[in-house]
Amino acid sequence: MSKPLSQSAVITGLSNAGYAFLQTADALTLLDLDRGQLNSLRDTWAHLPRDTYLRDGGRYRSRRHGCFVQDFPSGLLAAVPHRAHWQPTSYNALHGGLERWFEPLEADVVSAPVWNRLLTSIGSLFVQGRNVERWFIEAHQFRIDTASGIGRPTPEGAHRDGVDFVAVILVERRCVRGGETHVFDANGPSGVRFTMQEPWSMLLMDDARVIHESTPIQPLEGYGHRDTLVLTYRAGSFQGPGAPG
Image 1 (cartoon, rainbow, N blue to C red):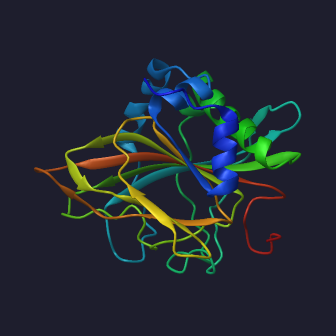
Image 2 (cartoon, rainbow, N blue to C red):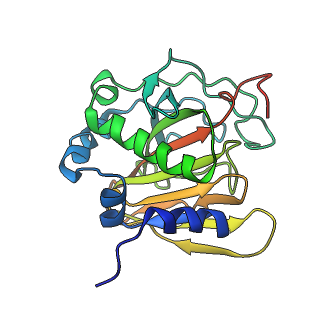
C-alpha cells in the first residue's frame, strides 16, 4: 500500500516542479472532504448553459462562473457580486481582452457546506506555499461534450491563466477518449502527460511555473462528456482591464 500523500509533499511538489497531482483518496484525506457530499454537487454539471463566447464557433462547452475571496489568517470564504471573467491576450490569445459574462453558479452549489470546504481547504493549502492576506478566487464549472463529434477542453492551447495557483478537479468522465492533460515547465522542455480518470482527483499548479492544456475528446459511442471544476487563486485582485499584473 502506498504511503498517503502529505500536505508538505504537495507543497514541495508545487515548489520543485510547479505542480502536484492528487489521486482521489489523497485529495479527500488532505482536504478533509467527503466523497458523498461532493457527489451531491455532480448533477449540477448536467444543466450548465452553453458557453456563447467560443471564438472557434464551437458548441461543445457549457459553463458557469463565480467569484469569491478568502481572507487570512481566518481562512474564511465570502462570495462577491457576480462579475465578468477577463484575461489579457498575453495569457489567452483566443479569448483574451474580452469581458465574458457567464451565467452565475447556482445558489444551491454556493450554499453547500462541501463547496465552502473545498475552496477554503485548497486555498489554505496554497497559502502554505505563498503567504498572502487574501485569495481572489474564480470558480468555473465546465462540461465539454462530444455532441458535434469533438470537444476541446482548452481551445486556447497550452497556456497560463495569469493567477498564482490553479486547481483542475475532475468531476466526471463518461464515454470519451482523449482529454490527456499536459503540464510543462513554462521556461523549459520538461513536462508530464497523463489522463485524469477518477472523479475528484485534482491537479494543482503554480501558474507562474508551468503551462497546461488538455487534448480534445472524442466519443467512444454516441454522446460523451468530461466535467471539471477549475479554481484559480490570485493575490492582489481579480483580473480585469487595468488590474495589476
